[in-house]
Length: 341
Ligand SMILES: [Zn+2]
Image (cartoon, rainbow, N blue to C red):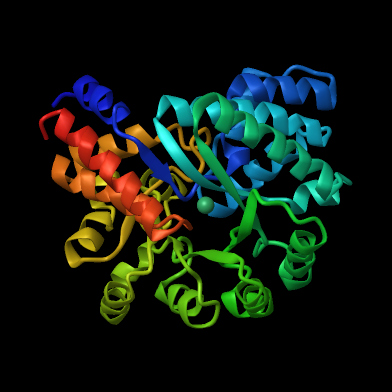
């Protein structure tokens, strides 16, 4: 298949995404609107290209924080969810578990319940208009330390919201080791909430071991440095903890992967690890979910049958019942059959 044929075909297949940051979905047009509201001046083309230039994960995080700084009030999330809806529809993503990172907004003085009120209103609207389910994981963040993480977590208790199903540990992996966040993960899992952690994105395999053994993470964000540790590869194969792999993101942040073709996703898949495909931050990394699958097909030699399996993996990695997973996988099978594949 050429790219057009592939993208048209992939668009016909229902998909899930389990590693997406909502603040990284706003279009440039939305960013210009937010900037104008916040600073009263136009966001210049030079400023846009500077915003999207980074050489590593920490540089990217600085840009991420700059985007968060453009928000004036909780209502600005309305733009984010409108862009998210468009992204999900364009990629035929029918179920999405996404991160939002409250720390910077709380520091700016936004009230948590004001934010979740907007989230719930927009998530209900997306469900009603498009039949797409969005669930959120609140980022407890390695960047701001354990006290801040615990504070973020306590908001889930204080302001219960059905759309927020648990926590994610994101932010600067090299600055905030897993061991600092054990109390937050212990509490979240004890409370029956979901808990996932970025690990092995910017730090070696020891970070993944810690996410598994100390945090008992239910999924691993990225996990690419597992490739350096044969024992870890065996352990991940055995446990079948889902890896939320984000190929283009890893190429952009440049730490361990220099090109799509040399990304370890192929080795992970061949070894029998539980691999899912995600975008991480689509606007920042100039990608979308269909483009990610295209890169796997065209540069990493994934066959269409393997891509079908990857798509099913994403549904199987969701925090939903076994029956719901089976129903989504049946839809994927049906859509591939319809296309004669
Ligand atoms: Zn991420």
